[in-house]
Image (cartoon, rainbow, N blue to C red; front, side, top):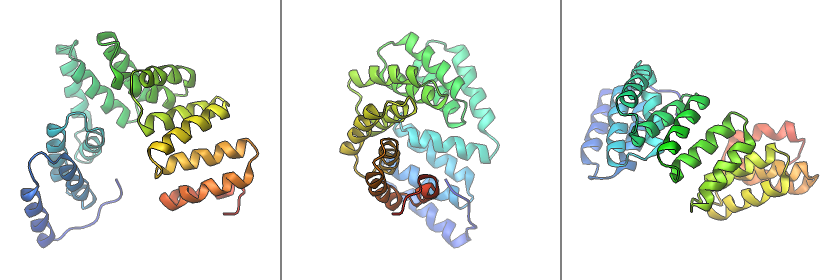
Length: 241
């Protein structure tokens, strides 16, 4: 979420009116309103909306991530993690609480701590697809690419087939220098979500490693169209697109 902007009393009244009209059970609307509050500097209101979204869908990862950013703004991140830790200590076999703590660690960039909690979750439930997937992502973030591939492939064999999973596998294979496998995984991600900008971006680099410069340049075009921040890669690739 980006920098905040000032908000007037009239706009605040309008936003609160919108909040009252959100239909029951619409977690996405609560999350989106929370993001809007956050960008206007209304962090307490943002936390409230993210809580409503999570109450509707406890596995809503975007809202769970957003609420940690909002809590940090109001000085509550440490308190939130402390509360989760206390819950884990009092309920060590509650996998939902451990998953929430792991997600909190991951959102704060504490990937090693997150990985440890996901491992605890897998000790409690070895078949937990979400834990295998999230552990794979955390292992990738700590540079343990072989271990990450193992966990992600377990999740995939269990039926998980999200674009994000395939993209993460592609990142791991790319960093391991296994470019053919990286291309296969990234293309699979793009089959599921052609608008996944990060997948186009990574595929451009895969082509670059394979000395397919023209194809790398072509693949970078949709990446930049979908996410202008990728234009900064231009100097690194030395391409004209």
